[in-house]
Length: 276
Image 1 (cartoon, helix red, strand yellow):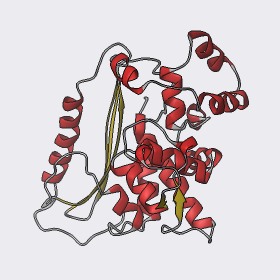
Image 2 (image 1 turned 180 degrees about the vertical axis):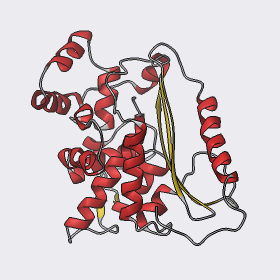
Image 3 (image 1 turned 120 degrees about the vertical axis):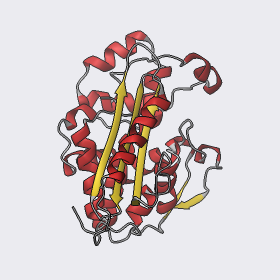
Image 4 (image 1 turned 45 degrees about the horizontal axis):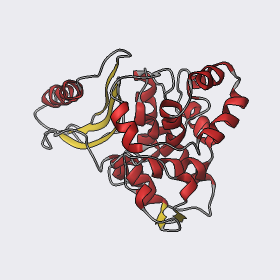
């Protein structure tokens, strides 16, 4: 299914891989905001002046906690598009070719809002190498944000998206958890835990990390959570509808309901924390 901004989990994984392999880079390394890497909301970094410096940690936190699209595109540029594509395989994505080329958010907006029908047809037909060149040119297409918000009220071109299955999302969350040593206070899990997405019973859950994604016709909610007895779970709620808007509250309630049910199933006496 199309998953919207939940795809940012693979960007986070690619960033972690860069931090592990490039000893010159740390979470405190500062990056400058660049006009050419600005995207459309959600987020807030698009409003910052070019040249404003923020740490890699800040970019990653904004990307996950408020789904900041400008933060995402800066990080994709920083690690390299191909490295994000490698992260798909690193986390055992079942069909990584579906997400190659891995879209920057600004490119997705251009594909949805700025291309002509003929350009859509061309993009669909050309091989990956040609798609990469086209995406670079689409990135600078002007988009009237106010008009786009008025017009984009129904699903459009759901074939132009990021894609994953439930097991793919389980695998990427599990990969991030393992790299963090299953420690909620680690950099990775702290970032994932900034916004839980839904209310949850803190007496039942020691840790809840979350990333979601949506556009008209697409809703994805994915959680990584440690229960009070130490057991870890991934919960995914995913819906696509190419014809009509999705009841997002219904999907969110379903995901929250699963967390409530799993939390209630924990043994009365909490066990010591354990990795899965």
